[in-house]
Length: 202
Image (cartoon, rainbow, N blue to C red; front, top):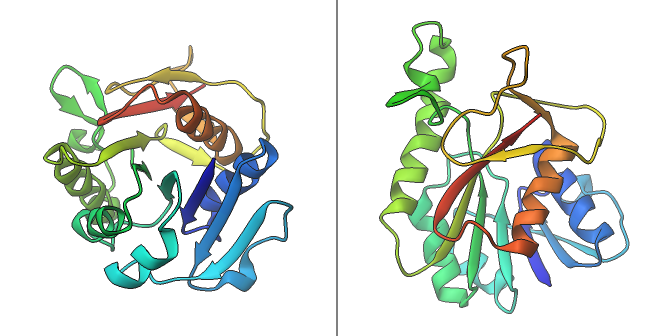
């Protein structure tokens, strides 16, 4: 497939670029500072500003899917507008864990111990997901990670979920960026969660 990755120089984005290229996909890696993108066979690095709908649409036109690894300072409607304008059939988004449920009707962000300083960025992800859920003319997927996503080994294993936080036997919810990237590219290829959210953890 021909895919465009936004935020390709970040921790999640760079791992997604690497994983997709390793599987033979043709990757356009877009970042504000493309010089920070590693040189990899099958990857073309380009400068791009995702907050400019028209410019982004011109960059992503002709691709089979866009994967956004951006922070949520770019609104959902801006990305959706670019995808629509470019005629790209799919949008996959690296989401946040805060909206996942830890009990029926109780989200991660609802925990009294959820750090106050994390709430503003977490709400950005929740608002983004709500906007996607109101969208029926773009085939979107929102991928919430485990509660802790860290720089660690590529184990090649993970357990998928949908709207509930995935935890291990010790009650911990975590996944490495490398294994998160595996789950994202698996979704790109298998297309199991069209217009839906999913999650993954160990």
